[in-house]
Image (cartoon, rainbow, N blue to C red):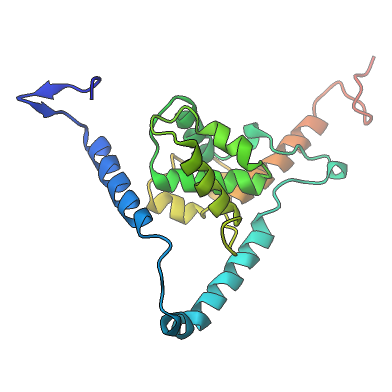
Length: 209
């Protein structure tokens, strides 16, 4: 509050800041009631749906979850320069201490987990957040990683990123993919192709005399 303007005794907020506060309040209220104690008869009634959902999530995880590549393929592993614009933007905001919305935190956490980063490495990216709480952040990261349940989450698709306002604009690769992880894989391939085609290098990678 000390950094906020006052007008007639009222704290002045931009619309985006006000929406962010409401989002966080709703998130905190829902979180206090979790995990829900769901009656056994309801669990049984919806089990055929949850089984299908878990199956679909597992298939998505297998398809997109292993974004690191074998060293023999020549790909760079966990190269931030190949991250899609949306993920780079969220990470930049976190580094600058911007209080990013929960949907963006979920997206970047799931993406980095799919990249193969550890929980500790991901928690480190949140330490500049104005509302950083290590225990709370650890719980959320481990929950998305599947350590707190049976489901390991995959980063949201481009469509979902747009829905939540986390898409910051397309580039030429964005136009050809529908998922941030697909963007990463495609850009890695393009980067490796570009490096192989650089002039003045032999097939062995050494500069020609």
